[in-house]
Each structure stands twice: as structure tokens, then as C-alpha cells.
Image 1: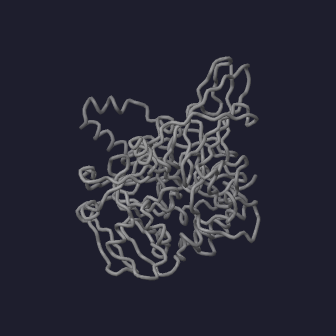
Image 2: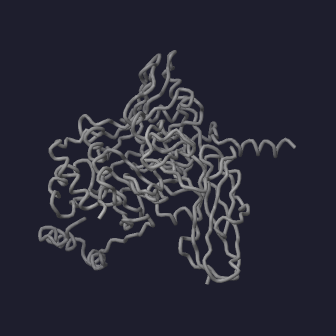
Image 3: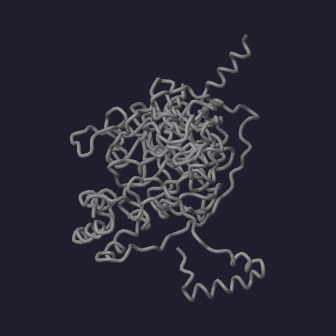
Amino acid sequence: MQDTRSPGRGLRRRRLLGQAGAAGLVMAAAPVRAKTIDLPLPGGPDKRQITTAFPQKGAMILQRTRPPLLETPFEVFDHGVFTPNDRFFVRWHWAVIPTEVDVDKFQLAVHGNVNQPVSLSLQDLMKLPQVEIAAVNQCSGNSRGFFQPRVAGGEWANGAMGNARWTGVTLKSVLDKAGLKAGSVQVRLRGMDQPVVADGPPLMKSLDVDHARDGEVMIAFAMNGQQLPLLNGFPLRLVVPGWYATYWVKMLNDIEVLGQPDTNFWMATAYTIPDTPNADMKPGQTGVKMVPINRMTPRSFVTNLQAGARVSAGKPTLARGIAFGGDCGVKQVDFSSDGGKTWSAALLGKDTGKFSFRRWEAHFTPTAKGSYTLMVRCTNTDGVAQPDHANWNPAGFMRNVIETTPVTAA
Amino acid sequence: MVRPRLKILLLAAAVVPLCGAAQSALVLKSTSVTLPDSSAMFPPGPGADVANANCLACHSVGMVTNQPVLPKAAWEAEVNKMRNAFKAPVQASDVPAIVDYLVSIKGPK
């Protein structure tokens, strides 16, 4: 994005390098070329920049600079079930994002239909009983770029998800500080980010009172044992295990207890899905009842072999990956190397909690040279399996079709 | 066998309370960052100036250039969503030029 050809910039650059001395000159001699990646999105465009320009983040796929949309490169998911903080995907709706947070001044307000409004400092909050949970955080529109016909939105491949150990306090314990009045219906969460335009709708998400108080929904101050990167919601982020990331409000600083259902734009209009199995409908279909998106569905992926990978004919080959059950645990992962004609149960890795990624692995032997179609299917502990046809809806939400990875044995 | 059963129960619990000394010793540190911006503009063409003037206040151009080919009706819906839902200050009289431009760069050929 920097125009290094502009004379002014070139001059400034030379001066800075002069001050930096020989070491600076060596660094400047390295070619400045943006790395790119091709995402296999049907019809394209598939080229994206790999960026390291964002604070507290490593190499990420740049989907949008402002407000940031950063996708996790898929190979990260082969390294283990927990996604490193500096590779965890990033998604913001409005570009007015505070870039400074003073931990001594930050306050979390609880107000609305409560006995006694309270304002908690981070110290107050961390004195409450702490809990920890491993949970997948997945964008509602993860994999939107694979929808056919294509739909508008963040054109993600499969990397708008991540899994972390979240440490914090239950939302219930914070609500109890204020005390809910009779007639409380929903709890509305809001963060410090703000609309760019004055009358734009600020991002607010609501949960039913019973859900908010279930002891699983929590306010996290740490992910994977560290404070959150600012772009992942520092200092506090709501964690809603088993539910899509739209509810996991970042930079959470405002909790309002409502005496009636929330009808704000982000609940009533945005982030709604067809009220059908797998949020599936036909393109152009009208009169479909829409409801707020909610629980996640099971998914699984091969992580050690990419589409088009070469494997050795006649040799036992390892396929490995991750699975998650959505709103409950992983019961079983089945693997096929013949395009779904035959399936066998994969070996499951350690259980790090029902909302977490779970490793699986399977071996297959491509007996002859040629093409092989690998497929992987997760069945969750509620008995729900991934579907064999892709869902469609106009917002590109909740894709969870059985993944297909073509490889060639040579 | 009481002990193995207890272990299984603990593993099955998704939310693990951290008791007493197990409370996190993490000390949060104030944070200040700088976010990169993009000064990239829409590709040149008739209507690019209207798109540059109306679209880039809220988001960088990559949001649009990364979109797939979409029919004109979809582009109209997007521009109207920006105006009506997100309250982008786009004059109604500018909408046709913006839509035509978007169709020229991201419409069916």
C-alpha cells in the first residue's frame, strides 16, 4: 500500500536508513514483495495478500484492511487443536476501534432491568471465581466464499475459525452482582467499537436470560493463557460456547438487561438464517421465516493434505485433521478415500472439552496410481452428522457440508 | 473404582472452575497499537470517482475488489443496505452511478 516511488517518501526513507546505519541498509536490500495466497474460491477472485502488518498478529490472510478481516492460513490448523493467539482470525464490523486500552481505567457496566447497576474494574472482575473452557470461535460466515451461487460478504475460505482455552468469569457471576429484576428477558452485550457514521447501528448482541446465566457463557480476559490481542477483543470478550462468533462480543464494556426481546438491527435483521434444517433454502426462494443465527453445527477438515497434494501409490498414507461437534462434543469422525463410497472410523485424539477442536487421524493406502477423493465426516454427540450436500442462504452462513479433498497418488 | 470415575467426570465437564490458588496469576497490561490503513482506490473507470467518494469512508476498497461477480440486483441491494441499514451518507442520486460502476468491475460479462 505504501508508494515507495513518491519522492517525499523516498527521501524520508533514505534519511531513516542513514540513521539506522549498516544494519538498516542490509534490511532495506531485501526485496519488498508482498506474499500472496490463492484461495480456491469458485469463480474467484482467489488472490489474497498475506499480511504481517497488524499489531499482535503473525502472518494472516488479508480479506479487508479496514475494518480488519484477517483469516487464519489453513496450515495453522495442522499444528494442534489450539490456535495461537497471533494467528487467530479477526473480524470487525465498524472501523472505529479503540487502539488504546488502559487497564486501570477500563470499566464494565451492568445496567438496565437490574436491582442495582454496577461498574466493575478489571481488578474487580478478576476477583470473581474464575473458570476455563476450551471452545471454538467460528464466524457465522466462515467458508462463505465456497457458496454457489456466490453471495456478497467477507469472502472467507475455511479459516474464519479458531479454538482457544478461554479464562475468565461466568456472565452469571457478573449479572448476579447487579441482580436481575423480575421480567428480565434478554441480556444485551456491547463493546467499545463504534459506528463510523453517527446514526449507524452500533454492534449489539443479545442472549436469552437463561442462556446468559447458564454458567457456560463467560467473560474471558485470557485466551491460551495470555491476555487477548487487541484485535481479538482485549481486554474482555464474551465467550458463548457452541454458538457462532457474532455473539462473542469483543472489547465488551456494556451489559444491559432487557425487559423485552432485543429488536436492534444486529439481532432482528443482520445475522438471521432461514428457520430450516442446516439453514438451507433455495436461491430466490421467498417467504422463508428467518431467525437469529444460534448454535453451531458439526464440521471436520483434513489438515495435513491440501487439495491437489501428491501421495505415494502403494504406501500407507496418514490423513489427519480436526473436527468439532458444534454445540456439543465429537462422537465420531469417519474417513473415506473413495469419494464417500466406503467410510471407516478415524482415530480420535485427546478430548480437551466438548466445545473444542478434536484431532482425528486415519490411514489409507492408495493401491494404484490415480486420483483419490478424501472425505471426512463428523458426527456429534447429539447424533447430528455433517450433510452431504452444501446448504445455501443469502448471507452465506453455517456452511458445514462434508469436505472433499482431491489428491493424486503417483 | 472411585478414582477413574472421578477423572472421567472432570474430563467431561466443559467448564472447569479454577479454585483458590489456581486463579489465574495473569496481570493484564495496558495496550496501545497502531492499525494499518489502506489508501488504495477503486480501479479507474466511469463512476470510480463516485465510488471512491462514497464507499471508502466506512471500509477499504478490498472489501469490494475481493467480492465475486454478482448480478446487478445484488449490487443494488448492497448499496441500498449501506444506505438504509448502515446509514452511509450516500445521496440517492448517486446510487445508480455507484451500482453501474460496481457492475462494470464486478458484474456478469
